[in-house]
Length: 376
Image 1: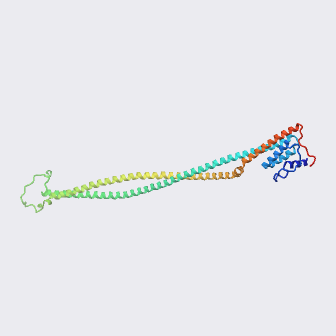
Image 2 (image 1 turned 180 degrees about the vertical axis):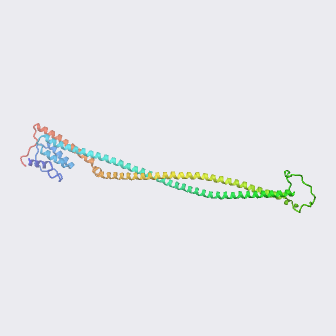
Image 3 (image 1 turned 90 degrees about the vertical axis):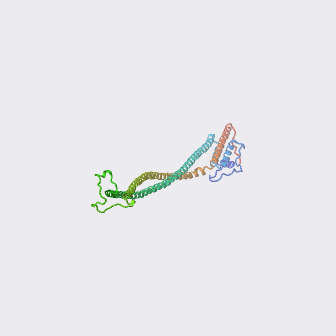
């Protein structure tokens, strides 16, 4: 039997050497003579051998050897070997399909995650840029508002000093005018009384208590005294008029100074009020914008932290895609070819299965399967 198998192996080209050696072509020397050159069973074995050679499959080659060794046995034994090989190939294809499906899903999911992370980082960069621009703008506005507050303080300090000086000067001017008026009023009163007593100035009717006495031209009882002057400008009425004019000037100066003081004080109060309002507004602006700046700075820090975490996740995703490459990209580059080759192997096995089934049916009908030559 062993000798027959060796002869069959050499005749059909079935490899019996170690799996590490390549499958040799069929030997041209025939040690086995088949009764019929188109024997169905040998066709099945040849089909398996050709499929093994085309696919460079040691498994199919071993199967061909096993089938050839059991051609004289029951069909079920041969059929089971082929069925097992079919199931094995189908299982391999199923596992490879599942692996391919898993790889496709993982790659798709990872690439989607990668794109999402990249988009998120782009969005975060844009948002951080907006927030940083807002922080810079707020910083500039806060600086301007503080400068305005400083200017207002400086202006009000200077205005207060000027107002104090003006108030003091006006008070002195008013006092001087009042003192002058008092002095002039007293002087006018004395002069008027003097001139009335001398007769140079006529008394008012109510000033006469009794009728005047007619005296002589030169009463002996009068001493020489004021008799008047010839210059009209030096008459008592002229001097008094001058003093009264000056008194009017001082009175006018007092009124104008008081009016000016009231106007200056009103202007100062209005400026003080408006600047106080402006200062309060600017102070509120500084406080609100400082708080907003702090919030935006915190937001930039938060966004930067999120960006850092996202960048870390992106790096892990990219590393995972790199790790998938050997098994799912490089290893699966010939997936279609392997699937096609495996389908071809399965088809050859099924064809051989049908061929063997028909051959065994013919054998059961009384036909002789093999005739061993009488000489070797």
